[in-house]
Image 1: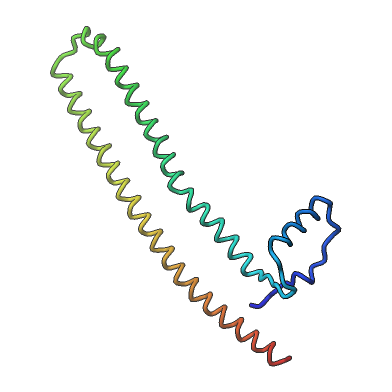
Image 2 (image 1 turned 45 degrees about the vertical axis):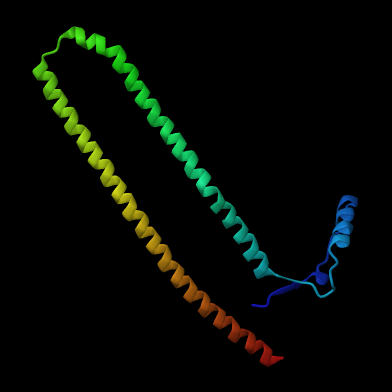
Length: 167
């Protein structure tokens, strides 16, 4: 677990004048001792955490943008039907369609609306159950991963003890 790279042991290529200037400014602003060590685990953890936090910070923005886009689509379709209503009302009123036929059509349209509304509710409930199942799966995986990391850590500790005893 103590895989450490010493900065003093890194062999560098010759620097360009710009790189040399940047390096000298860095050295002036942050004095380093000859014992400064970098851990590969620290590098990987900090960079991975940084990326995860960046993605996580974008989630609300992404969801809001998707919501705005979906709302715009729905509004557009509502406007289309509203415009069609105005244009077609006069046309269909002139056809003088039988009222009994229109009542039957209205009943069919209401049944269709109720079915679609029920399907939307069912879909929402299914999505809710699906998300709960996925969250539960992630929690189970997290518990498993924590256990495995604990076992891994114990194994590395024993491995390090073995090396320390050989010295």
